[in-house]
Length: 256
Length: 175
Image (cartoon, rainbow over all chains, first blue to last red; front, top):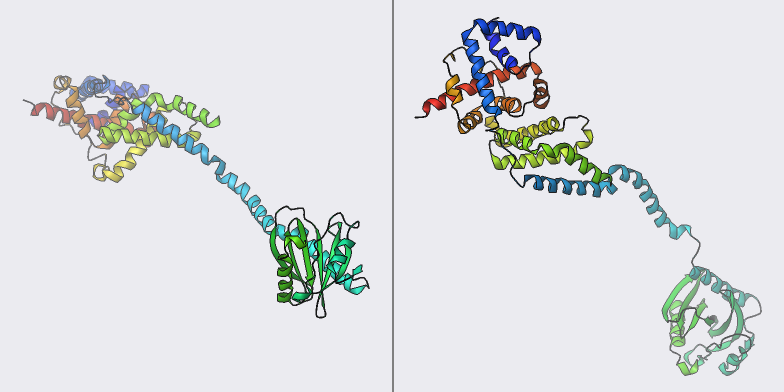
């Protein structure tokens, strides 16, 4: 064996990493070579010197705590976004998208609201009153005739007021049926236009502002006041009907 | 629950080897403060990839992560210390070390040994640390350092020879 090869193998020999054949070869060489034998001894001394642990750096106190804290923090951070992990998001995304579409479409998909149904009913009621010869059950311009007429026919007493002086003379009163209940219908006139005002007790205690709609060419105003629901409908020009509504709204409680 | 389990298993697997991790990090960075940071970073990396740990030897697994962490840091902060085109032959042993040094070597104290070891190129330093300080087998060192098993022995032979020269030089300089 050449010294060049032996110089490498002596460390394998020293570390007991050589197979038996190589071990025999290097032992044989070391017996006959003073240089390599010296190297072997030097390396052995060095290795032993290092193995005593005198040059070993032990972890400083506190490092373990520091690392445990860091790892547990990482564990927490890892477990938290688990709810938002990609696999979860991948699953949830179509659901979320579907929900979004649903929420967007629901107003269009679901049936008409109570208000819409009522608006239709009110307009129908108005049209019907004009078609049949049944505009007024009590044709009278006298509010003191019309109001008592409802007594015994309804479980409430509707406010009746003649607005003739303001250009909206009372034509009469009628019983009608809206919102699944009998209601009072008051008929007013402006020139050749007729106005139906439907009145019934409100399910809501608080007053509400005036809401308006236009349907099939008819203008519809409705509001709640003093526990009564009012729906006024007419083919009258919208601004004039609004004027009429304002007058009704401003009725003093005593006239109610 | 599961997360707590994982943390507990992780701590059982690698926390006992904190000294080994710190020792290697210290020898690779040659600085105590940097070593602490390396160890912490290595543990966090290890925790992140703990699910992939299939072995039985937590120490070797941890130290390979410590080594990678340190090498990344060395490349970023001490690039000049890494002999990128590390040529084994340049550092090959020649036979001019025939002077009988055994007795002198025995007199080297731990401070002198540390200084000499610190002076070794990092590729030499790490095999000496893994072999003589940690007692890993050549096969384990090959796995940790990602170098061929055959290279471990030759690199270790050259490392020890260089270390011997460094120690002898220091002993000579001493009054």
